Image (spheres, helix red, strand yellow):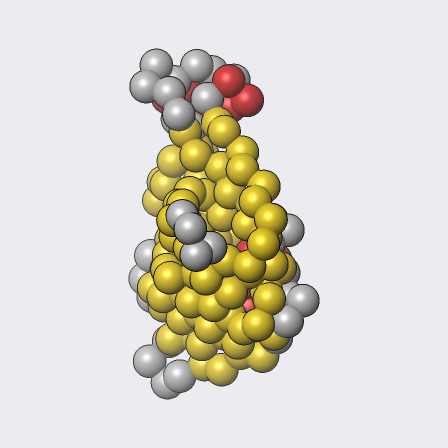
Length: 144
């Protein structure tokens, strides 16, 4: 992993083969003091894909009852990663294609870069956000 910060608060992150995506982006946020911001772009290839999505409309209190986790093998071409950084923690969603299907969802830990990963993080000034449980135990953005 390597990262580069511009004068206007953007951080560009290069991930290399074997780097863990979410974990590395969390490290980059810490390295560049990104407390609140956004991952505004992300591309690359992953070796396998670990995501989850909500498959219910009634939203039971237990996350295990509403989330479907997918752990998919193979090489995945990542066409977009985006999300919000609050309290230094990225909350990201991903869209990826394996040659036969396109899937999307909440990016989980443990996703490994296959060939490369390139991400841009925008640091926000004058705004401090965190995530706290709201209705149905959903983690929601709140001003800190």
